[in-house]
Image 1: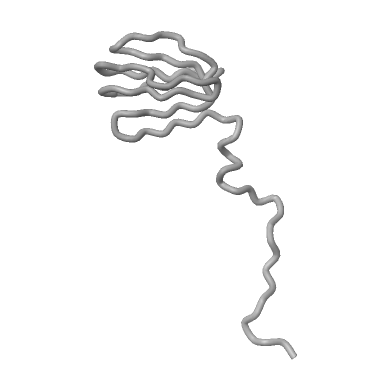
Image 2: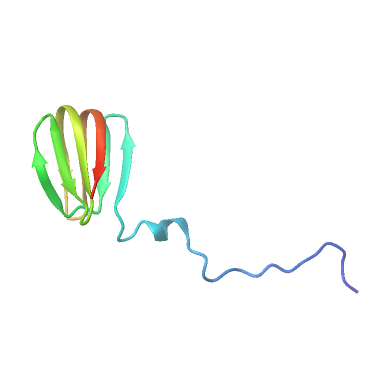
Length: 90
């Protein structure tokens, strides 16, 4: 005898977890006067008014005052300062 309203749910094995989307892909996270950029290929331009970084086929340009890169590793960088705008280009 079957119970009314019960149904066995199958797990979708192809379903990806949210963290799966972050690996090997650029990621940007802004928090106050900081911006974490993961997936860097390199720094293209650096001054206290403009910082441009390469993400492979894309570029991100930060405009503002007192800009600096606080931390730089193979995986990414933290841009700090008074970030007024960002520009994305390819």
